[in-house]
Image (cartoon, rainbow, N blue to C red; front, side, top):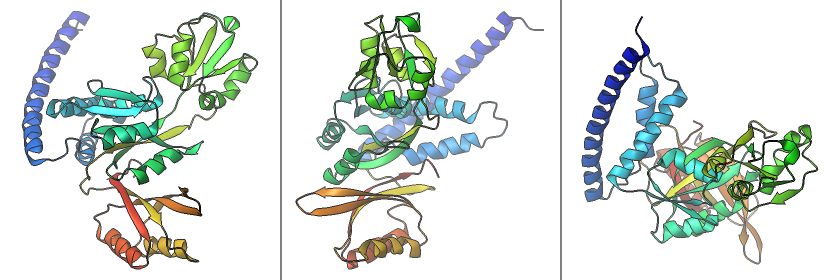
Length: 358
């Protein structure tokens, strides 16, 4: 039987080979980056990254899980993109929020992150060219749609959806105190606090004063300075502020998920399993919405989301946010857009991107 030292020698040799191969990969990445910059092609190509992952996940004799392969290669992709061109990513801050966590899952540790106070500030940053990418929440499966995100998609026409991220939202109970008995206050964003009511009841914490904060990241920061307090926050916020996790995954709904949009200024190429988002303003007459939806049915296109948003004018009029399966350049989608235009429906294309649930 080999000793631990002998096995470690084998690991060292493989690490040398892995690094050598990564260096070779980055040489190709650098050349591709030069070609992209000379032709004005977008650096971030979600459809290409998805194709690579699909090929690797279907390889024979994989010893790694799907999650492990994705985690490794998403970081490799992020490093590669930064080599092609340094990445500036705006997101709904502050540092340590779930949006920050979602952004890092796609853009890695090397990117330059710009935390902003509001969702609209992220759109403005992209619209003004101060950042190439933005990450914002768009809906939660328990709280519903994030209205300001949908409104900004209609307001900032140069900002497009280029990818979506679905992330499980897990709350942690963190404190620098050693005992629950010493905790005299609990910091959290109201939404996070309300999603953990059963945990608080089960541990006799419901009567402990709740101090609402602007974000769970701020809650972790405050708890890091107060030994008689705790916070309900994300793992990343606890890690950044060096606050020990007393209890993990404390939310009432273990299926709590949030959908995020990755925003930029380019159009994705067609690929398999696309999704498209639009804003539709129907003609003001009876049956207009039914008529528009029937166009999708007649072309065999599945609508995955329909959300009404008020047009903020004097009259009580609405615009409809629609997600559907397909790409804006698909022939059946083109036929719908042409017919909609003939019937006086206004369609605003928001982006076509890889359907992460497809």
